[in-house]
Length: 218
Image (tube, rainbow, N blue to C red; front, side, top):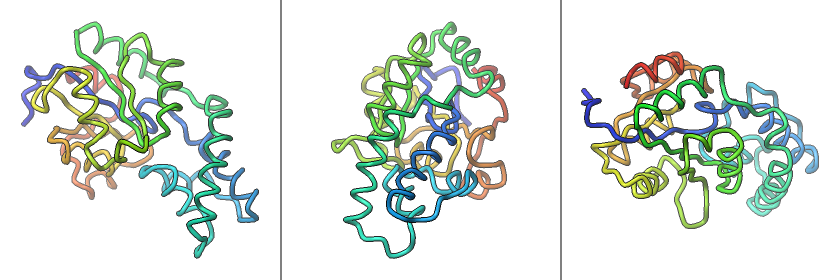
């Protein structure tokens, strides 16, 4: 059982936890697929494909047997398109702003870690959450993607806290694994890209259903 009284920092996943980003991800993935003569994917397919970084999402969305050279090209094209359109339909989930304000006002240090491109993570944080969050870390060549612990460890260093002073909040199996690899307790949430049954099957121990429940936990 996590001793909440020792927690000084809360590290959040981004997509599916703080932000609804699925529509813009779908549009950019389908833009690339169409450009390469491949069938488009539905919103529900994209929901299943995301979580392990954009390259893996594209590998899952592309037709079987697509070469790594073509995936590399698709990855580059996705980056250009998504950087121009990542704010078209993206917005915080209901109650997120109130949750972050509550936690911030209570004195908690807050951070974002994501498998999204680092520039996009920082842009989205600046757009939506900069009043409460000033540490936002995404995918770079120097930092391994989740579920490797690198982004969470980097966030803790920037926040000036140790693993026994931090907790992780996310919506997926990747987040559960990331928290475990970083030595952090994990709160799993159900308003994002994965449901309660899926989270339980993948080792979730604490599951909350609303941002208000997360705020009330602390």
